[in-house]
Length: 97
Image (cartoon, rainbow, N blue to C red; front, side, top):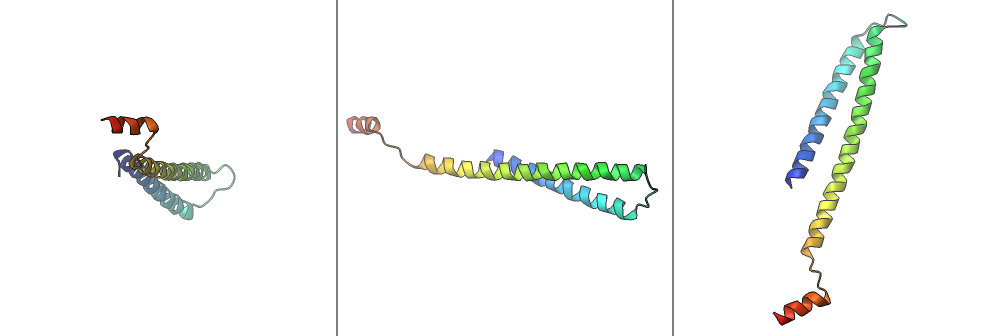
């Protein structure tokens, strides 16, 4: 596992963990809330929190998809590097040396 992939995986785990704790806090506050009706300040804050959690979930999903593409790209790159690409010119150089 390369250093870049480790950093990406660590960032993904950190974002995911923050989202889980944020969702748990949101649920804890939401279940104990007694709404005062229209213009309730707590309801406004809960809506803001819900939007933030939704945006964070979208970002975490995008980061996971990007990490999968990078991992696939690295694997393809390693496989191609291990293959030997002989051209007529390289074969001639090998023959003459």
